[in-house]
Length: 239
Length: 270
Image (cartoon, rainbow over all chains, first blue to last red; front, side):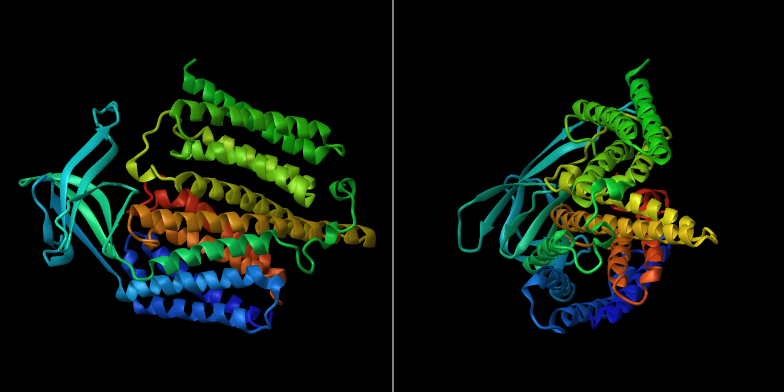
């Protein structure tokens, strides 16, 4: 409890900054870039430090396990995302649909070449549509690309189904199917390639935070939690 | 009458029954009749959810109409938990009132039984993400109603000592009720936020994109976290203010983001 007041002040400060930036963003004048800077990064570091203070300021007690999990989960999540912010890589590429073409170097959407360390290609692409609406527009129901991979030094052709919500891992890269479009060169598939050194730390943090929150909030109530109801029958409480 | 007219009528019947139940909870001492009316309202509400489900062929969480209809039914689920696990049967009026308001709101929405489900929504995380949020939103809405009741009761000027004591007990009970509701809502809100982050990584390639809807959801979460912490400090008497700010942020997250100018939210289809 010693650092509860400090935690409240820091959380209130972070909420206020976030609120101010989000209101600015809500007016349509700011973008997500507002939040991707070293100022917000430092603020989240302070938040991280407060979590550690909450964990280590008191002697270890098993009954506070949920609280430890919760605060440690936030730390892991923020550290994981910090690693991604500092050392991660995220690139968008357009790949032509061609059963015979694979690429070890792809031109990014911003024009820069990207060296992959393996060969990648899209052999085929299938899309199914919903029935047309009253304006004749057919919305996408599902689309899937046949991803072809040749690993370095391995002539064996590997194929995978790549679809929205179904990314593929390859040599540290996570490959996402984002969309597709027709260009002068034919059908092109838009991919997102991402390297995130903090990925598993982030996921571990998320689940730890979630489990900790459930343990704390559904665990044995503390102090005054049930005081007004204690020892009373349902009828008395209802009255 | 077309199928949509029938659905609108069923929503209207459920709304009237919910509001009727809320009035009965308030007026009569023995709430058996109120329970029956409340149960009937929930049954009609669930019938609309089932109709949506059957016609879509998947859980009806796509459009605002479908989600708000489900939210109305979620109040029934969370009320059952509060009754059996936290002795919260005295909160029946607030639960019925909030569910009724949801179904009144449905009357002003575009009702369509068939909505397309874009590829981004075809994920295993979709149902748990929305379901967790609906449970937490229902509880937070009831908490906000009880907080307002607490404020009104606390402002009542009394001279009689016994009446003052009775009023203080009532206010304390409301305050405790709000705390129990938020304590129950918070894990589900966390689950909604966390599962949403994992899903976002699967579909958009980022756990967190600082998207407008995500930011408002984070502000809501932080407000309720702040409330739960502030209750253990000297600022406890003002904690109710934080919970009310949290509820305003929740409303902006749920309804407001799509109405904002040039929001360009990645959650635009919600």
